[in-house]
Length: 167
Image 1 (cartoon, helix red, strand yellow):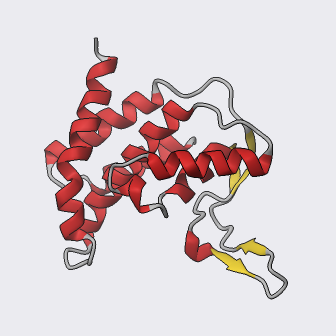
Image 2: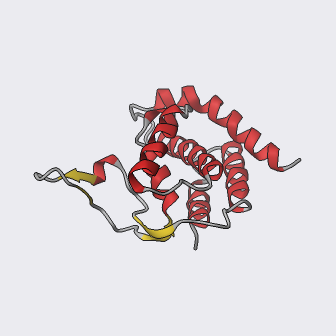
């Protein structure tokens, strides 16, 4: 099962807890992603849940990644966008920091980041879906006011993404 299928399966589990319109928009966005999967990928071992709290600095200055439970072979770009969620600008609808993050990745790894457009859409889907889940599962979460504030921006971008494929 690929990552988009995994997200679709999770979405169905939560469909009764979130309103029908957000579910329809999320499903339409996931359909766009599933129908436009990149043909050429940079496959390798990916963590699948890489995040700032899963990166530890060692006394000698090296960094190590912990929590490899969801690890799998897949497109390395998934981990890059998953890590980019730690950059608040991506979650809040701005992309300047994401471009800086990708440039840093390319410089340090000596490889070009492929399929940027696809992963920008995946990042938007991820942040919108996560916001809906947080708001509905943890209504008193500190991020809920901000999630509600940025939702119209994200919904507009998702609606445009879906509409652009239906022309």
